[in-house]
Image (cartoon, rainbow, N blue to C red; front, side, top):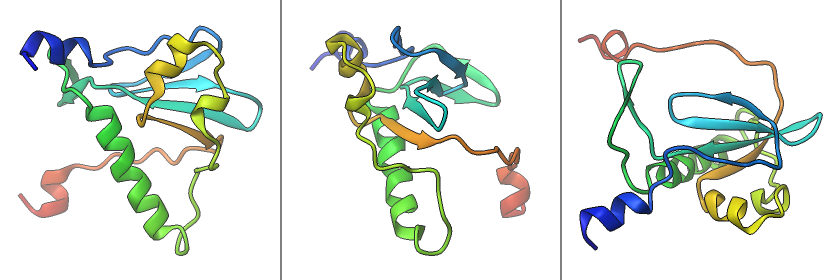
Length: 126
């Protein structure tokens, strides 16, 4: 696969017209599903130091989602999380919209956020 093909398979911005867009962050797009749930889509956008860089990384969103799912499942018996178990494909019906989801999307509970941002240098004593 050449570089042009790889970049054409990336998702830098989702477009789910059937759901209202709540927020677009540096990496994730969040859509309103209903009063209790949201659709989170992890894109392939790359950010560093609060800047979105111009070159995406293919499948980054799917990998981020799979890593998060691993830890949510592993720690679910210790601390509750926002996962619903709802298949993201069930909240959109359009084939073009479903194609954007893949392994990069989650349907999650709407919860009150706890706004904490960490600094790796401080965390690791650099």
